[in-house]
Length: 595
Image (cartoon, rainbow, N blue to C red; front, side):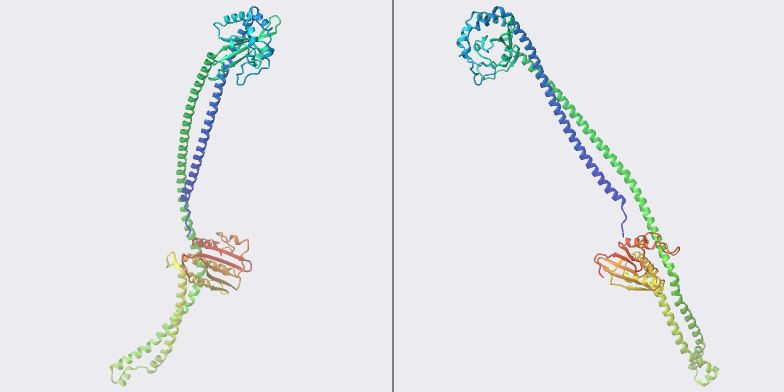
């Protein structure tokens, strides 16, 4: 039998699977979003860190540049003041005297390999003699005295004077007298009348000999003739800015430290916000899980209620089906009542008549038998039979006549009782088939031989259908099946009755059984008018019938299909108009069953 749909079980399994999938998806997306947020946070923090480092670097560079620009402006002003202040008294005479000395023999000498950018382009060896003549000039001594005086108490660490050919005519550091600096950009720019300053990096330990390890700023300032306003020489001043750069670097380091502290605080705040967000996400997930659990509980309660309603409706539907099936069976039985009554009335009538006639015959034989019995009794007790005969005063002819009829009457009575016995056997067969059809004396489910069951149904059907319709049995050996016999009998009778009713006039209804694979197949075939194609799909619909009003309920085939389905089988139909209709039932055999 078909099992009922377990709504609660299916709902529970489906809901738990859906909730598990939803929870997995939420956890997955939550972890993915958390990872993405963490990646975004780290990326943003890294970008901010790089931006802050760039800002600090730019700030330090700008601070250093501003400090150098300020120092450069003051250096240029100081150089211009020196050149103006010393022009008439010392500088102009010195340049005029130096101009007369020839330096052309040392031109074209290149800068030695590995020399710094501010190294001379010409070897002092070549310029030794001309420079000795320059230093021997009286104006040189005067200029040197004035410059040494001006350098006292100042940050100027060195002074040099170059002519327009790049030759170093004067240097506070005697080692650089005679250097040629035509390759120095600051000198070239100053020679064109534009002041220029540059920061010289400190020399590394073990570097070029003569390089200064301090941070020096070199300013090249054009020295102009006050009369002609033309550049007469280039004044080079070197300033020690090591302390100032150290302060700038210290300030830059302080800025970097402050930025690092703020960055660390920002990182801590970001981590705190992240932990807070994770706690909020956990709370949200727990809340959502609680809501899902509450929703599941509510839905489970609703489904339990719905399951109860469905089961109640199923019970009512089963009861209705049973009532409808019983009603259909009673309808079928009602149709058979008249024929069965006629079948029973015939043997009952002649059995009653024969019994009456037998009783009359026995009544007629009673006087003769009693008289003969009296004679025999008296003859046995008297020795004189003649005297006894005379004393009885009996009518001998009458007694003889009565006794002569007794054998004939006994034979007639025996024949009548034999007919009565035949009628009783017919009625017994009818009752046995009716009892087999209804199975009132059997349990609800029984193991039966379907061939025997079908024989009983066909016997009863013959009592109802037209005598012009012949019912043919073609049975094969079948295994015994466990089924509800009464319900299957109703199905078989309904199909046979429908097949007979589909025949207009004479015809044949063939009922056959066979084993087909793992199923038992019962076929009911007729050669009637067939079912039209537009009607065939609807024949199993409840209350659908093509019979005239009042001659059919339209439930027979619907109930038959439900009964077969409850037994795990199928009921199919094929029909062709004008040829006939075939109904085929297939019921599963039990495992290991054999014919």
